[in-house]
Length: 179
Image 1: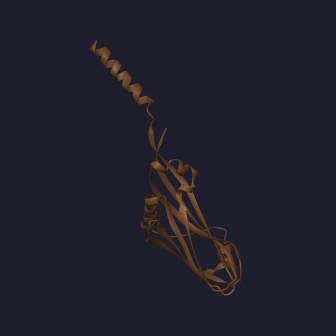
Image 2: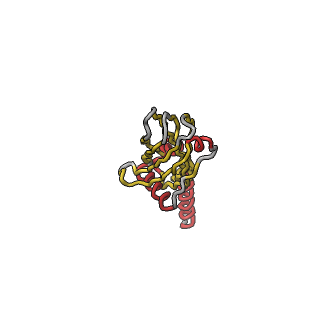
Image 3: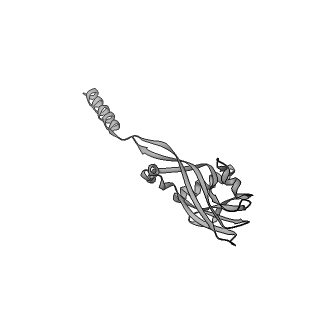
């Protein structure tokens, strides 16, 4: 009798466990893109704009937002598109990545002085060379609020100018998902 009771208890336990959803960690690789349209009239030489980049703009991450356990920023890059302006115009700019809840907490990258037409002509995006500590800091910003502020500030040597400065962030998110 004890054997039958024990067998039934084990059977019910196994049935109960097999009916539960299994929770596993799943990685999501996403590309977050932000475009800064820069239009400067004759005589203007500086630009400044701010955007918010959010991991939740990705449908897969929006679906699991309550179960995200971490982010890892894998790489960043930039590209100039749609340039229209003087052939010899140069640009120097800063791209600032700020914690959305504290703009004084930031990671900054300087785009060195370059011919805008050359930046536009290059097919590949230019890597933003951050060290691992800087990438980890950006990952923490995302985990704190699923978003961060990006500012572009710069100077050009000549105008009028129209261009798009595109910033791309490659991110891996880890979330617990039920299967």
